[in-house]
Image (cartoon, rainbow, N blue to C red):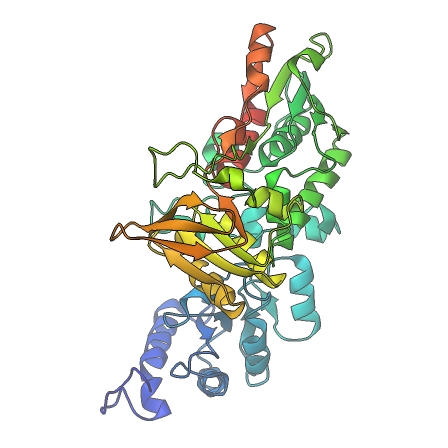
Amino acid sequence: PWCNRRDDQWGGSLENRTRMSREILTRIRQVCGPDFIVGLAVSDEPDVKVALQRDELAEIIRLHDELGLIDYVTCGSGGYLDFYKLMPTFLYPEKLGADLASILKGVVRNAVVIAESHIRTPENAETVLGEGSADLVSIVRGQIADPHLATKAGEDRPEDIRGCISCNQMCWGRRSRDYWISCLINPSVGRETEWNGDRFVKTGDPKRLMVVGGGPAGLEAARVAAERGHKVVLAEASSRLGGNFLLAGMQPRRAQVLDLIAWYERQLDKLGVEVRLNSYVEADDIDVAEFDRVVVATGSYSPETGFQKALPTVETMPGLENGNVFTVEAVMARQARPGKRVLLLDEGGGWRGCGTAWKLAEEGHQVTILTPDPFVGKELQRTAADVPMRQALRKLGVEWIVEASVTEWHGNGATIVDHTTGERRFIDADALVTATTNSPADWLMPGLAERDIVAHQIGDCAAPRQAPYAFYEGRKAGLEI
């Protein structure tokens, strides 16, 4: 009724408003015959008052079902007025389509009811089906992340399923580019003809391989190489696998990242990969008689200079010697304890800065985000996560200043410059937390070159970038060796 304002046979009463769908369904049936499967898709938008609500949708579906026009109805979430739930990120609860499906299940007599939207895992699916909320479930991104999901579930191997992390970076996030989608954690997606899908052919020339670094690139390279029959040793300098990706998993609502790292641990164990934790590797530590190849995946680090891309002529931020300046990595790793009032300088516009701000705000800090971008979370826009993320930050009292940079840190606050006016002003803060561009941790490569050791440099140690590139280069290295 909100958008259908017609006063002829196509608007007004329920019969008139459903005439379009009934006509289309009737004509499809006439052309395609009684055995052709025909259905309707509906979407749950309870937070949008002008949208059709659940009781209204139930009335509409009951009418179509009674007339025998549909074989199924599938229930999703979101819409043009609630865009961010169309393909929900981890910011939203799971099983979003199940509530509407359960209501429609109570009114249909003939049609099958399908629940979709953020049903990520077989466990989600079993819950929906076990509660009788739907007859079928639709798992989309979960089967992009692991195309063998159904087979593994059928073989009672849920621990082997690589779970979708609901990031939307390479699936939904590529929709405005060439529509050639991929997957952050499964880079074979979109490259099936090149890489034979998410399947691995055993090598005819098994090698002894050392992977240095247990972040995303190193984990994927080690796993794929082992899948292909190579003998792999993975050396990680810290006490846990994951690298900086592990810190991302410690941000609010991002435990799916930790689940993924745990999946890698299980897979490496099953594949016989020798994992050496607390193992800092120098070039001289590598025995050329023990290994045929080396993969360097040592990640990146913050140079702690406060360099800002928006102020390219200033190599080191003035005032760093005044102290109380920390990187986001140090904050997330609990290596730093910032004071009550935190100014977070975010030049990346992604979860690295925004997720850390969220974490600090949840812990009771008064957080102000400062960014040279025109809005907070600029890089999250294409993943349909920026608006719900900003809403979550606002609820926690986070403030922000956009199109600005720090010209000097004073130990108790910062002088900032407005890029639109050139105006400078001082803002109080007990600590400055920086989410600026990292530098590659490529210290191992020169030593390997001196010893004529064949090495593959992958991930952030080649160039600090977003996570999809690390997983891609890890997969590529594992396939090429």
